[in-house]
Image (tube, rainbow, N blue to C red):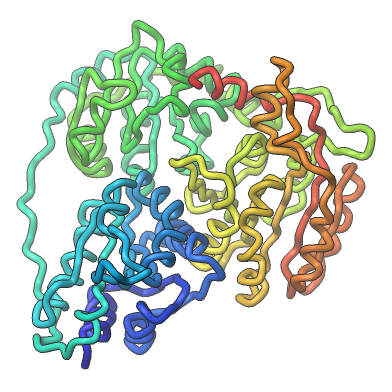
Length: 538
């Protein structure tokens, strides 16, 4: 057995279940070893897509992601997806062949690349210790929620494996009891507490709802945790740029805001404007550094969100807090974007994106997993497409890269095969990720791909257009997106008015044996209101 085979077997023994990648000579043997050990391998058409698929799969499955790429260009192609995963603290192991000879055309500073984008760089250096080194990479990814690049030098990969194949046991981490006294005292005196849960709280719905019930807190989430409290009468949905007017009002009026596994960044707080000057801010996070980033916490607790919430529920008295029958009625009536009136802008062969999205929300099954790309359009599906729970929304936007949406939807779909996968993309992101259309068809995914087509990079149009800048570099002629989809073996429907959604109904009523592209030719006269807010920080 060579080292490459031992590394693949070791990762499988650690618990790896699904891997994504593009196979070249430098990762051929390690990938085959993963497959031989029972790991499912999903071949992407581009390494950037593979990294994003693995990231999304990890988010939706709760299992660490595995990516396998060739040395040099295989890694650089994957770098944007790796950056997104690193910024999001996704547990991910990237296996990359490595050319260590400087004269090789494949030679680059791969460890330096990983470090530059926030990932952890590791390397298998010894044939006898390869299994232990692979296990350390996997455990670091899982235990510290990090994206890890495990470099596999070509000469080491090819060497005979001289060590054992048993994965060494993981030492138990010492338990540290979180200090909850100051936060308990704040909850005892708060009259209008609001909990904002982030990705670090996705496992803690039961504990947070129990504590909120005890303290009278309202419940909101960051965008990445959308759906976490769905079904609760006190669910405000998303805080920040996607917040409903009611949610923004109630969060702004809070006297205590607690971020649970949530950075409370500029998007979640609208550049801090949702935190009133008199409000106290607390954060609960596994990372001590997170307590002082973005909106600093006056009260900080280092610990697991579920454990801290459970301990607090035992420590604080029952209070009414923010919860009244009148407020519950307002949340029922005003708590979703669909309840907010708007003037339909559809005309001239283009549909208002709100009307398009509401129509899709009415048609698509409730059991869905929605994945969002970046761009001017992204608020519409994020606001108007409902999801059943936190596993119904996949939002790979920590790096704000356009073009990750389709690959995100593939990874999410494979993690949740029980739900209808929905990809929401702009025309720019759709064309950037086009290589993975073949992957959708090849895998037989019953995916609905919705393209909000304004024939432009709309964010730039609406940011620079009002100042009379020339826009020829960010606007484009019409493209036959439906024809592109059909050429890949998909069904497609073009939507310019609500009645055209009958084509979506027909697809839903059929066998769904081919993916569906919904080419929405959307209005483009104005920028989205959430984007106007976001650009205030630029």
